[in-house]
Image (cartoon, rainbow, N blue to C red; front, side, top):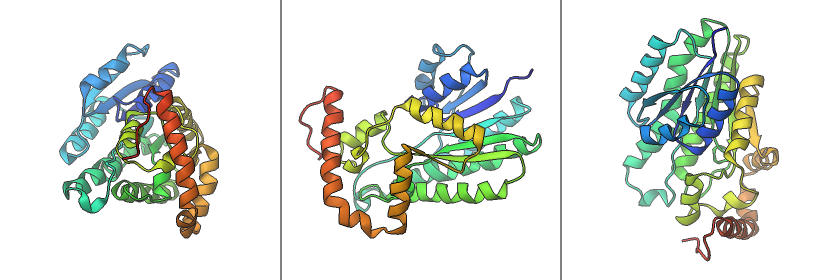
Length: 275
């Protein structure tokens, strides 16, 4: 039997590693893409099958098109596309260099759409396949100091919602994963550099929690999967009544700040102020 093939972007990160380990156990041939081959290489020893590592800078359309071309040329089919790469820089948007607009847009929204546009036709040829994208609760509830991140994730969510309907009945499953805080270097950066304390209102999830959600999305094609599930309820409520966030902000920030400090203490970091 021909092994299934999966492409995971952001392939050098903690979430990608957890996804790769689970897919490897299921017998997938893996293709990992990331801007850093060195980071991807650290995952290889944890897999039973050697993955293909492709360097790709998702801020460059030419790199993404080259990645699509390599997949199309080398593999007769692709069974699973996992859009995992993501980027955020926290802080007031007006204080940022204008180049951050394009950087956020390319990594979080445009490149994932390009990959879907280029690779889903390979799935359609066989009448089966799955697209799973790591989105964010920030795509539903926009937070101060994360304006560009939220805007680009809002865009990706909208695209996935429409794509889910466009591909209905084709055999192609489309799913978005909506985590809150995940224990990654990105979260640590936010914890130490002024990211929203609302990230820590609930318990921080592990990369493997997200990996399990990805497999569930690939299997079921559920349009939106929230990690944790309770965040889906609260986020949808906030989306319908956006003024709730402002009203509840003081108490939520107090809870979140306590959670942030507690999480940092578990990491061995003491008495770090929010700013």
